[in-house]
Image (cartoon, rainbow, N blue to C red; front, side, top):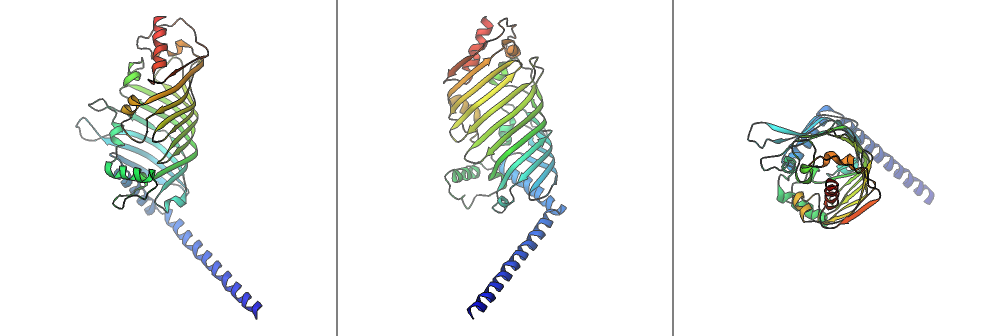
Length: 350
């Protein structure tokens, strides 16, 4: 009797599990099929553009959405525009991208999160334009559309508390990127005016940066940002020294901006940067003010520094006769460009 009861119970249990699995497979297949419909993709594009408008003071436009959703997505002809600051009609295009291929975590969408595990960007064109006050319009474009709402979300998530009930949630308020492989190919940057130390250098204005290629690991969460650059190269204006190449690691949270093994190569020269900047949060806004008021503890060194490689960066464009400096290092805890300013001054005097 007992064995018969166990057999009957086990049979019903197996049927129940098998039936639940079939139902799950059926509904999963239906959901997967719906995601491949053009109507569903159009709704997702509308949702993406609407959430962007809710989060920022600029407009996002996506030409088309393709791919095997919810695992992979390809966005074509992506643009970010911002209302012109000169009072004229229309908008300035701040960013345009030929194609973005994204690998998604499908489970994150169930909790209204957008979790990206990898992506590649083809043909990005970034434009840094200035307004009448001399500030870059990107600062306005990425300003929160509702500052109080965005601040409430950031504060709640930093402290591990649930977001306020009155807060409007969107993917852009809760985006999370942990991407082991990010690539950028065929990129370009246009800067109509340079400011500060960069503006005093001998670079042409407007400045055009082309042939931008990059490969890196990227982690972007509300609490921290980590950027492990395997390779990044670009052609800056018409520098005779050749392309600029970068590699190294950058970390940032709500207090520190850290550099580890950060290396810049220009021509035959190589500069190495490590250390930290206290008082800089890249997500907090007013970056120029943060950098002015921050405390710097940096080590800047070079195993080989060919002064003539930096000749075009000097405001007076001298011809430096000293061929190179080897194995130099300097720590400056008060200003971010103190070491470079002293080298340029020494070179001009020499």
